[in-house]
Image (cartoon, rainbow, N blue to C red; front, top):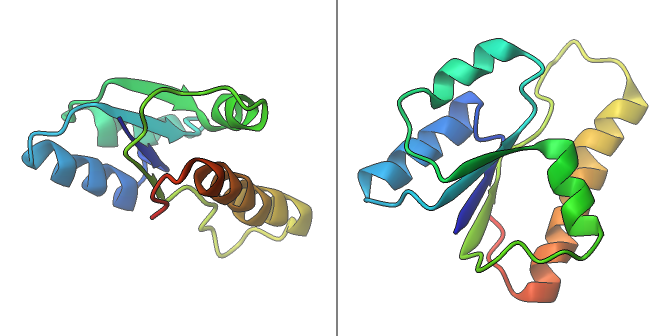
Amino acid sequence: MIIVTGGAGFIGSNIVKALNDKGITDILVVDNLKDGTKFVNLVDLNIADYMDKEDFLIQIMSGEELGDIEAIFHEGACSSTTEWDGKYMMDNNYQYSKELLHYCLEREIPFL
């Protein structure tokens, strides 16, 4: 399985599309679909499953194994240039990335 965080965003969904073009469909998309308009980026893609980003973080922090993971493409982040909530940005963009990195390092999973 390949995991794409931020998979419903512009860059993430294009990574999923490129993987689909190579015949890869065992893909877990992780994202926050609070903004429902991002869902349209997934409509024409072939994925195995979707998971909310908070649920995904809870699973990896608990040490729960997610199966045979080939790689994690980490594109999930808040890219808003008008976001001024520093705590949110540090939690969402920095701490989340650190947790994913440590999960991958402990399991020797490529983290891209």
